[in-house]
Image 1 (spheres, helix red, strand yellow):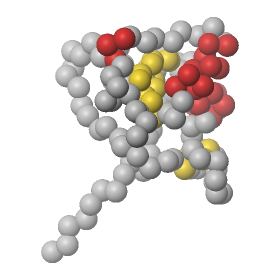
Image 2: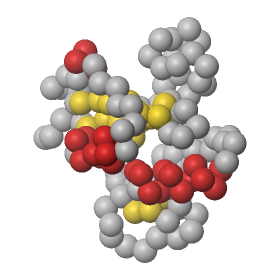
Image 3: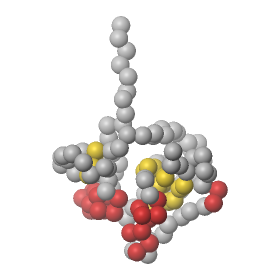
Length: 130
């Protein structure tokens, strides 16, 4: 009997008070979501975000973790190629950016936290250059 294998994440769905505005924010601020292409090549469609291949951590955390806010069930981590450039629009808008020296490790990469307009935490991760 053949066993199938999961090949990747096919979608990420979450509730929002204003889905249209939040989808637009992710597209405009981070280049994430429907109609986006991570490497600016090839066609895009109205439903999909074409991502660049690479590592993805899929992990449950203890219910009482302090790694992200206790009133949130999830935190999305987005892999970026230039953390400083990705953070620039947040700086220009005067939005909070959280960094901690203990988050950064030359073997793992650099990290920063921001929040979307509905308060959802977003961890930005720049892996080390190989």
